[in-house]
Image (cartoon, rainbow over all chains, first blue to last red):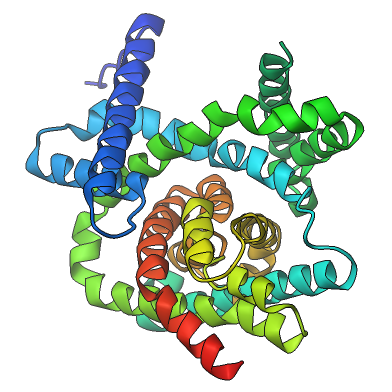
Length: 131
Length: 227
């Protein structure tokens, strides 16, 4: 007998799933910021929130299904969250003329070197994943 | 009144650029580049818009926090693979993070850039809030560090696919290399490429941030010694 097609969730259920996900992710980001402020050394709040959410997922306090859709949506829009900084970077006044050219050249060359090092080491240590 | 309009213009430019990139997925149509051009022109033409823009777009900067936190779900989904290859992956992250401290800053020093620029470039492969904090704590300029993050991120997002083909990298290696070398903007490009490369890049983005914050004093010590 053919399997019944899985019922698609309605708009209301989908919206609630995303809202719950955003609320949980925002709460962990906020909590990460609070914890980071108490630390005696610099540690970014979102990274603390990341570690706290991972611990909550491993312990089962938070179910992956609760945050999966919202986190996938936010990951797809990551470029948008950097867009204002990228636009404002073009107005950085201390880099002009030859210094700006040296700056951009160093950034592009440096990115290539790091990409090369990371990619080649990864490929060497995980050969099966590169086939 | 102008601030909601600037926020709407930024989101609108992003949606339009994403739609164009979906139809024509060419590297020179990367959404950050396409959306950034009209916004840059707008800010150049209007001093009022330029002064209001940082405050107007704060909600977008704030959303970066939940987005980074959300990568924990991808790490959780791949925890078994990480358990099997954890030490090897740690080696990839460690050596790549070391190279990131010296790559851009080293080229800048070789090209004769000022000491402040060199110091701003040491943490520039990490995500911008970390890079700005680390650079300012070690004699660099936070704004230059953020500008470097943007140039490096765009270079990775635009040129990364070419490098990946040239070096025949699989999805996992490509994602790790983009997340390490081009932080959030590169991770966004890896998410667009495939689920595996997105997950790999998300983990790399977070670990790179931690390692750069921890290892940056080593980079600054070497550049101080070389001066």
